[in-house]
Length: 291
Image (cartoon, rainbow, N blue to C red; front, side, top):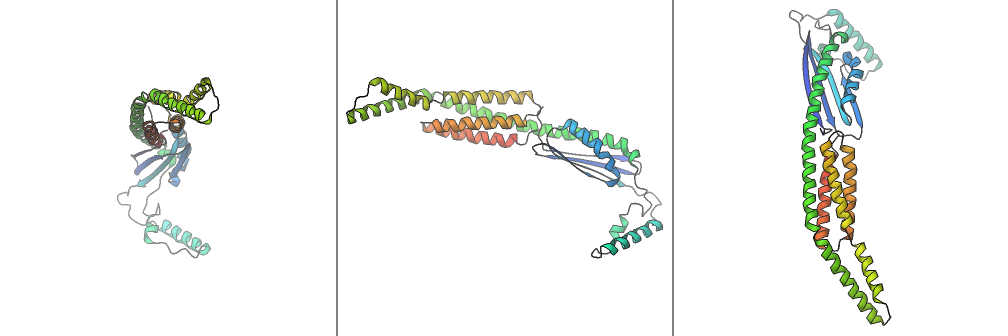
């Protein structure tokens, strides 16, 4: 299975007195980078969540959000006078130290956990629910990344197939092009020798023509490109964390395409090299998203 580093999952679970929510968001990163936004009452859950995420996610920036809401209990709408006094005293102390802060609003006061009779939450009581919620959310997150990874792998392999078509189109042109260019060079050398009146034997001319043919020979580049495409298909078929391996392979493919372009003596081969480089860049962009 090939996974993308991009994914999203959200789940919720009820508990006695409220609702627990978890969200997981993943984007690209060179390494595993975990970030947490947890309600203060649930901070103790961070280490366990971190451990389970690290066990199943190898790469990517992942943000975990865990929070809860409390239900209003029937008949519990009366204001807790002690909580109200506590809010007033805390507000006064804060403004005494930070006078630039304005007065509390009604919304600030009503969000105080125990003002209307809510008792808050106990972490130990919620721990089993958090564990269950983490399990289902993480499963959904992994599945979302796998679906995205499957699509990206299909796009990469399709571009690999397009590269093979290009290679098959230009490969038959190479021998004839090399022969023509070598013959042109031999003729130019003969003409230069005749015009100068100096004596250079035929073997030297043939040697120069052979050296030139070697310089424009792209059989090795075509073979390497084909071998890299074989490796591309093998890596995708094997699955797992393939992002870094494919990224390295894209560099190798691009190097061979550049050499092919530099050695080209045919307009068709030069154009084909440009097409190959475009496809390689498109593949490289997709591999950046893979775990």
